[in-house]
Length: 123
Image (cartoon, rainbow, N blue to C red; front, side, top):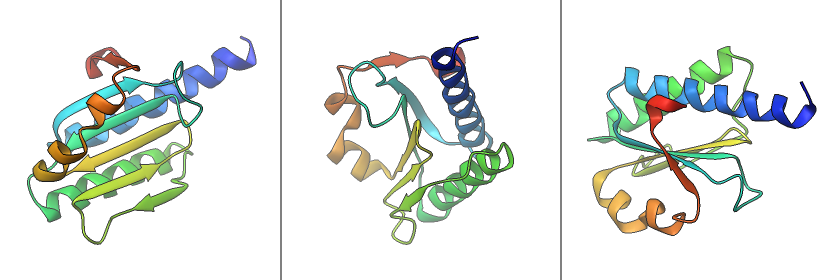
């Protein structure tokens, strides 16, 4: 396996684990956008919603824990204390967890529409 496909498999596995972690804590409306062809920021954006501050923080904690156990430590976390938009940067995978109001306001799905939307079940 060449280096590029090995990296793609690693980022896909990271995305799969993040989706599983979000589903385990009842993340809402989980979306996956493959941005690898349109940006050098990452391979995948994963976007999910939570219904309140406690759930949004629990979603974040679970994603960080599951990927950390898999050997993928988080590089940076933004917004944890206010928990209206938490960003977890794992390098090739960036996870966004929003409350309802901020998800509508920032509308990342529209901003990153040039990326390929992927069914989370297919990751």
